[in-house]
Image 1 (tube, rainbow, N blue to C red):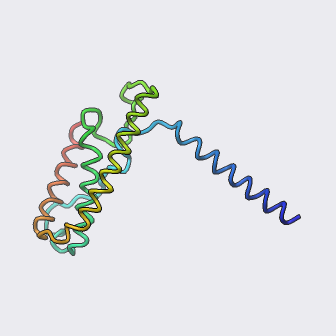
Image 2: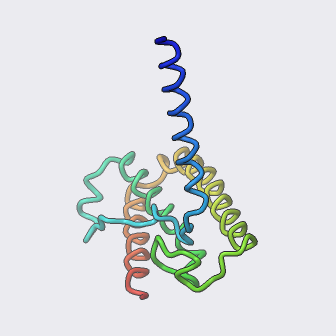
Image 3: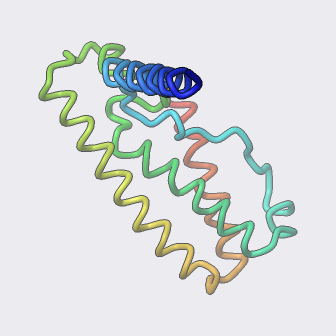
Length: 147
């Protein structure tokens, strides 16, 4: 009897996971990834100069990812979460496929780039890292002012 209850429980759990997984493809996809946002900015480089090089590398990579996710699409949108429907773009299979391919290509590029940067940036000059983090933050702030 216990075996039947356990089997039935596992079966129902698997069905519920399958049902949840099928809902996601029908949801509208964002043109700019919803992970492409930055909540904390640094007013000046004083705080950044107190961080270790490892912390600076991670900040640099985080900001680079945001810029890479937003910049190719600024002709369409500058804020994460905007969908094709929001812009009046028909959600045809071709348009959805194109958006999926673009997102996949961006993710592949970021994986390779992040791997490269994690290996090379520890050799970078600390002051250069601080300057580039501040530069990326200025770019991201500027995008917020576009709309």
